Amino acid sequence: MKSPKYSNMIHIFAIIHAVIVLLCGFLNIADELLLTVATVAMIAIIAIRKGQGLGIVAACVIAGNILGFVIGTYGAELLANFIPVPILHAITSFVTTEIIGFGLLILLNAIGGGSSQNRIWVPELLPTILILGVLLLIRIIYSQIFGNMLSEEAVNISIRLLLGNSLAIIILICCNIIYTIISHRYSWFSTPLGYIVGILSETFVIASITSLVIGYNLPFGTEHPFEEITFIQIFSVAIIASLIIYVVMMLISYVYKTRTRIENEQEKRRQAQFQYNILKQQVNPHFLFNSLNILNGLIEEHRNDDASEYVRKLAALYRYMLENENEHLVVLNDELKFIDQYTDLLKVRFPAGFTVEQHIDSSARNRYVVQCSLQVLIENAFKHNIVRAEQPLHITIETESEYIVVRNNHQPKSSSSESTKVGLKNISKQYLGATGHDIVINRTENLFEVKLPLI
Image (cartoon, rainbow, N blue to C red; front, side):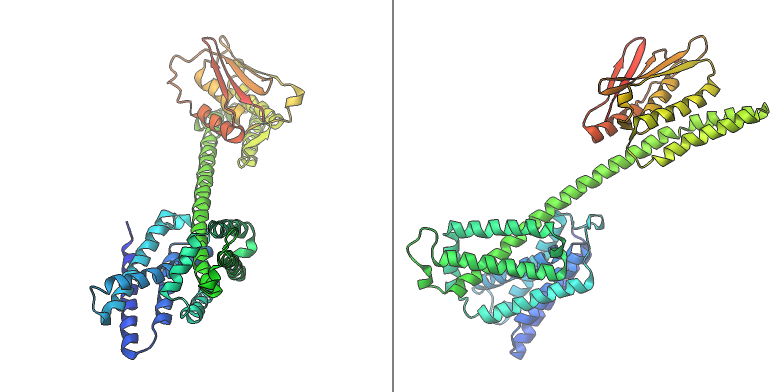
């Protein structure tokens, strides 16, 4: 759906165009300058309010003026048979403005310009005015100098010659593609001066080369079209053709960049969601609740030294989490030290109910793993298995080829609810995103193991 405020704006500008035509006709003065200013103003206001960048605003202005010229000229000829001459120009201007305005809205909504969340860069006011002013000046100069030369017959001949020369079409398309790529690669072209100089130079050079190719009927022609039409007439049509192709290339490039940016934002959101989930897993309320209960018990038993040591280890545990909360990957050796601290805390709660053994190849200690992935696996083992002195839980952490393996004996709690596997799913997503390799889960009646790829 189109926003009512934009629809009303387009209707207002369409009425302004019609009024300008009627007033200028009544005063017997040329209306071209005022109509061009009104068209540029409408396109610029809509494009800027839609959050478009400087290049897209300028491209829309160029396309709007070309479209307005074509519709206004040929539309007037079509309507001349049905509408009286005195109001024909006013009606044509009104209809043309409506078509340009709503066409612009459809285009900007299609390429993602309708939401403020899709904005890459909203142009500053002064650079925008400078760009639009120069484009407006060029439009006026072009019409004043070449307007008399571009008769309907000359335009038709030039278009026929252009469409009949494959080399000219290839030059127009390929050169505009190359220029679009270059202009997006170097930041100088994004400045007002760079944009103006770049588009003027590119258009002039391409139009000149194309005109010579057409005029001399290159590469294999024997007849010279310059005998029936002048260089300036072909050059004028070549400029319009080059600008049309440039606008199309700009819009295609913009759509591609917008799509890429949206995909990157989706990936960032996925990473942020993973970090949030893993943080919730790390700061497990049950673990923190149990830790505080243990600490309270040590204090009540007047084991102050043990309580102080417990607080120190608990603080070190959370310090590690906070220091690495923005790191997706950590060195395996650091993660193993973190596991030692985590195991020390578990021993206070389960003094004789479990063992954690590490068998790590020295060459693997400088490899990387997903942060807190080992801790999550150990916590899951405690969460879903019986842990007591007469039925201890045995956990081993060892390297195996290109993996680090966390393995425990499987002795599920009878009262344990079915696992949601949220922790394993989060680890799997993170490894797929970081390495393209998934984790490996093996389960038997008496054993459960998870293999994490070493990075």
